[in-house]
Amino acid sequence: AQTVTQSQPEMSVQEAETVTLSCTYDTSENNYYLFWYKQPPSRQMILVIRQEAYKQQNATENRFSVNFQKAAKSFSLKISDSQLGDTAMYFCAFMSYSGTYKYIFGTGTRLKVLA
Amino acid sequence: KAGVTQTPRYLIKTRGQQVTLSCSPISGHRSVSWYQQTPGQGLQFLFEYFSETQRNKGNFPGRFSGRQFSNSRSEMNVSTLELGDSALYLCASSPEGLTVTYEQYFGPGTRLTVT
Image (cartoon, rainbow over all chains, first blue to last red; front, top):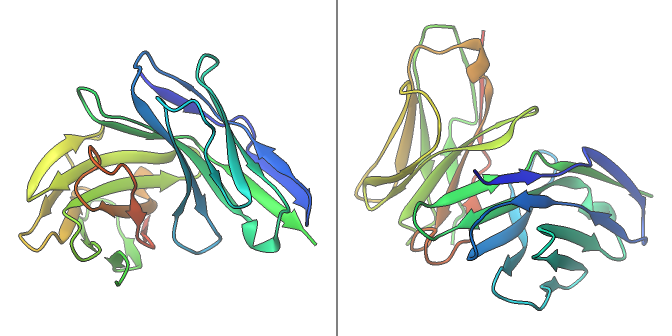
């Protein structure tokens, strides 16, 4: 069965610094998608970034980038120039679409950006 | 476009009662998924509806059920409530179903407390 593990329950970073959130997953499938979602306090969850497993190039969205290591089944999120508005829960998610659909979330990492 | 809306936002119920939660997806989105979010378990997938049919189902007991209407609005019902059902219930919609676009748009959630 697929699993998604986020080993860092909580993290903090100084404003303007860089922070990396880790995520590992386990699957025997070759075709899948990986996501990072952000859930700010008392606000709705939104997509931060998406990575297709068949793409070798790491996805980037402004200050957010991923380090996707397919062989190691690792999918970390790097936030550069951290801002106070980045304070949120971050969820790593795995989705496979071959055969039975599966969308699995990690338990989340609570990130606090300090002024 | 208006985002995903969920009603009610907060509910307090007693053990043994039943509850119905409602979700209105983004206009044009035909896929609606439901998740249970708890601090210890993260987000767990309940089920997905597409064009009024349940297409995918997670590992939850039969007390959890849902349906989707012709306008894509969805309801989730939990019967014989247990204390462990206390959670934030999130609804997410996507344009053509997760097997095509993969991205989900989340609502603000319904906070259910069972006493």
